[in-house]
Image 1 (cartoon, rainbow, N blue to C red):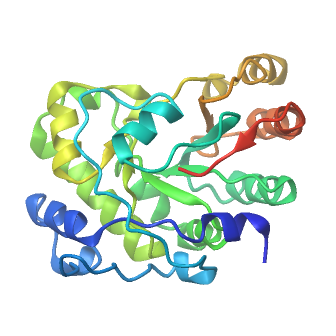
Image 2: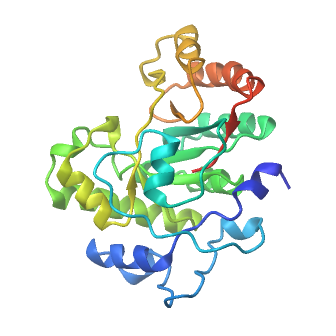
Length: 269
């Protein structure tokens, strides 16, 4: 059993808020875990039962926030979770799962013992269920990145955004057993109305503070240079889906060991 699996085994959320969110968005009862009686501990998801840590106090239900989360400090404040170490940093990976690049990145992360948050697109999980299960099987966490990755999501009507959120949430949970608590808008496009819809779904809006723009494929040196500027408390953005991610993979292979050697501690969200 890897050290990362032990680290991430206790991840989970309160079932009451998630079930209420499902009702608000029109989901059927089997799309999310069943509600839990007040004061009781929610049952673990299949992903978390692979390697469980000793029982700990329930994590507070996330509260609605009015700005997307860009740093670990903002995440702690919004989620109510314990503070991270002062040298902590988080890696997030968007647009998968991808049948080629996701497994390659997973092997790299396993070798380096680095946890990551994979922001998955619902219609990418569709047809790549085995790859999505590899991610949670390795102990990583998942975020909702919409069903179809529509651009300019912040300007779309609520019925569109709620459907994008609900369909992705249902597919991710049914495939992996893990229920995301974080939502990332495609391209970091936000609006007050979208933030309200996210809160209604029981999710927290997640952004980033270090963007190497690897999705543009600017070349490995450019991606490396931007990632090497990372500082404690930041949330890094990279991609495993959306096309050829050979530049991203090469940059991660070079940069992640350097960041670890600097004393940065990668943490799970």
